[in-house]
Image 1 (cartoon, rainbow, N blue to C red):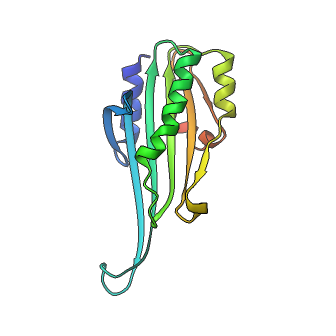
Image 2: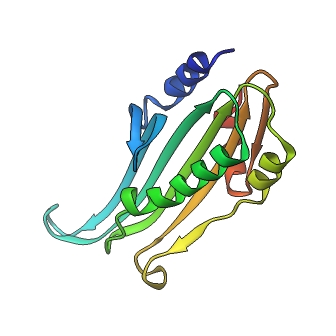
Length: 164
């Protein structure tokens, strides 16, 4: 399987619920696919203009393909995911949670350093002591030729979505 075929499979799975953008840039770093999902819950009185409270949950998926993944590229990808929080997440009073899913797609299984770092990766950030919500990062690595997927603990929730 090649990268385009895998990305088309993921697009097909996301197209009903996510907004999809090809070749998305964050801080001069190019992602092959960006997907955005927004869920908003409102309670109101009498008319929709009289909102009692509202909650927002967001999910962002950033997919990047690599012909060969070395330690430098991997660390740069992780740093870009963390920087993406400041660009993508807007912690307003209505913000409850956001999840950023970083998906690394490679041809073959990478080094043990990369695999172990993916397994141990954990990122959680609260805004204003949690009153303005929080953000978590899921990290998923897919080796398409070896049909191998490894995730961090948070990424196990969506492992099936990215399977081959």
